[in-house]
Image 1 (tube, helix red, strand yellow):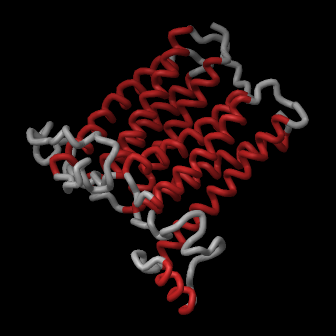
Image 2 (cartoon, one colour):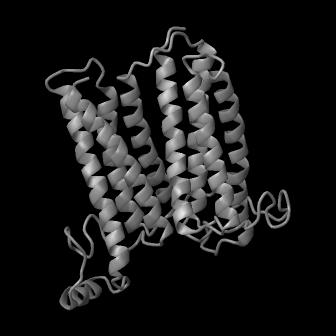
Image 3 (cartoon, one colour):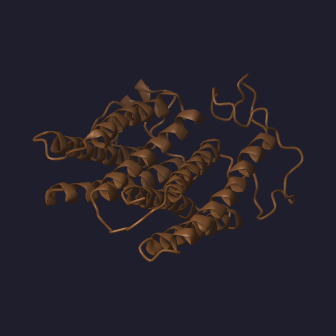
Length: 327
């Protein structure tokens, strides 16, 4: 890989982490609808309404959305950074395709398509008023962009892993899939504002498994925020089922990551990956528990989202490196 290309790729990875973390901050600080339109904010592509005249004009054009400048700026800064990330990804694709410098260009092309899908999801997040399934897919899109960037970087970095058995390679893919599943469950929990449904740990409402959880509406995707598919308000029992599923599956993630990490530690050339994976999952679990005990302070909640991104990045990097090793 050319040195400039590598620098752009690393910048893209760091920027993806920033966009994911800032997106979590926007969502968790209730600024997801800080701008009622897309891609601009109250019709402005640069900045937000800040003068008396602009605010009056904006509220006349969007009478259902009073201007809150602080929330609007959070949303627009997130969009600007996401736009820059899109340009970085476009540059990576151009450098890979013309002149033809890389034998494999599929991941770069996939990234460009993913960015277009992610932009559409960003628009729908606003225009469909934070519909939970769209918010969750938007989060997953950001995570997949990061994972693909990390995978490209791993594919161009040789760490001299001598051998990896076929079963170890398959296990790596399985661990990554399990982590992505947990991220989706976390996104669904956050998108439905179900994080506070259980305020104790390891119990939930004083029980290991609350008896009155409502599963019939918990994972129905075609519905509006805070409502069932027939327009009724979501019950606490539904939110509890969503939250309990996420925290319970976290135990599965913890078990498989620790088990896989211990397996990696058995070989000298894969031992660092084992250490990283175990450290990342333990920190993430600790952040999740701390959020419950401390009642989800904003900074810690954002860190929990960032921790998920780091855990996914470690798993993807490990997986790609193992695939390149001799069986």
